[in-house]
Each structure stands twice: as C-alpha cells, then as structure tokens.
Length: 105
Length: 226
Image 1 (cartoon, rainbow over the protein chains, first blue to last red):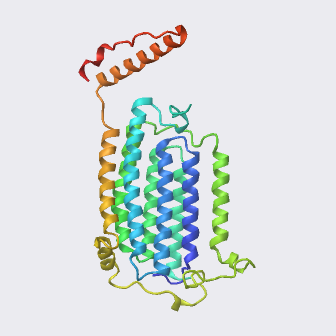
Image 2: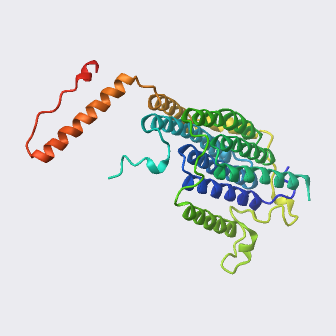
Image 3: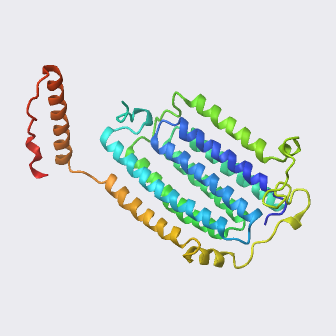
C-alpha cells in the first residue's frame, strides 16, 4: 500500500491541513466555522499519529491507541462546543466570537 | 509513479481543497458539506496507511455523527447566508498560518537534512526521512496480521490503556450530560424572571452608587417558583 510514498509526504499534507484549520479558527466570524477549523486541526494531528505509527512502530498498538483517544476527545469536544454555541445563540442572537465579550472587564 | 502515489496526490487535492473551501466560503452550510469531503479524504489516507479500523471509525464518527451535528447546529442558528467570510484580524491569522506551515515544511522535508546543522538522519533508530523514497524498502516493516487484536487487548488491559479507556468513557458521559444541560430549552417564564432579577440588581447597584447609602434589595415578584 505504501509503495513509493515517503513519510514526509504525510507530514507535509498534515501540516498544510493543520495550518488551514488554524487560519479558519483564527479568522472566521462565526463560532461554528471556528469549530470546523478546530476539527480540521484534529484530523491533521490524527494523520500524523497514524503515519508515524505505520512508518516507525507498526508492531506496537501504542500509535493506534493514541489516535483512538484523539477521536474520543474530538467527539466530546464537538458535542459540548456545539451545545455551547446553541446556548449562546439563544441568549444573544449572535454567534460572532468578537461579540461575545460579556466576561471582559 | 506508483498507483499509491497517484492515489495519495488525488486524496491530497481533494482533502486540502475541501479544507481550504471550509475556511473561505461564505455559506456556512456549504462549509459543512466541504468539511465532509475533507473527512472523506482523511479516511482515504487512513486506508493508505493500512489503518482500516480507523478509516471505518472516521466514516462512522466524523462523517456519520460530527458532520450531522455541524449541519444541525448550522440550521438551528440561522446564520447560513451572508456571513462575513473573515474578521478584522485575518491578515495576522494568515501570516501566522503561513509562517507555521513554512517552518514545518522546512523541518520535515529532506532538504533540511542536507543543512550543516542537521546531520542526524535517524529518528527512533529508523532512517525515516528516506525510507521508501530512495529505494530502500527494506527499512519499512509491515503491519502484523494481529494488529487490531493487539490494539484491542492493549485497550482492555488495565496495565496498558484500560484505565484511560474507562476514563474516556466517563469523559464522553460527562460531555453528553453537559451538552444536554448547556443546550437545554429554558421556559420563557424562567428567562423573564432571570432578566427581571438581573435588572433589579443593576438598578439597586446604580442607586447604591449614586446615593452612597445602602438601600434594601428589590424583591422580584416572579421569583416565587424557584
């Protein structure tokens, strides 16, 4: 399956996806779009984990276990984050992160 | 070029193109659909990496569950159309992302390994940069057939990842309860009572500050059902 694909191809693709997600998380004006950027970053991290597992330690289940826990935490994060966004929308009729400044002094 | 390389490049085009559209499109619903396309490409990468279990999990968890959550949240907040695509600090964000990407590419690519400061080509005892690309396929070990079996045993073994697995179950339960509690629908009466109480507190605070004497707290009429 891996004929001719060096490890750093995966690392560069994951780096690109991470940076696109970072830009989305920093530059969007909608909290749901920010959360989409965070999901892209988590996906990039998972590609890296599984690529390192495949190329360096394919005999050990440690890399798979790491990736599984990233999946679990990402699922919990998405559920809680979207619930927070819906609650904020109900209270303030807006989900622009720049307008959510109630906790600012 | 091998078949695997062609598949890899196609997956890269789909995945990164969709990811780029996720962060640039004006329509939030379209962004959710592009996000699904990007998840598909990532799942293809898992197949290429011979992690079939995680390709299946990517389908079920990300494409099946998380993207549906995103679509529901998009519909429930009615901000689909006319979204401003970027905020006032987008240039700084773009600068940070590009600098980080360039730094990571320089770090990962074989070019940096010919620099005088980076003479170590091995990492973890494996010549990982040049495994496969310079025609040394012997470096790359194959995945054992019992890989998923070992993974399951490691997850259920309390001496390895058993505790972490139990704790992640607790995390998911707490996350679910918390999500339900945070996003619960509150009765209009409750919200009105809370707003009245907040307004009364603000008024009494303002009066205290302007007069300088303590006045009795305002009793709120709606407070009886608490």
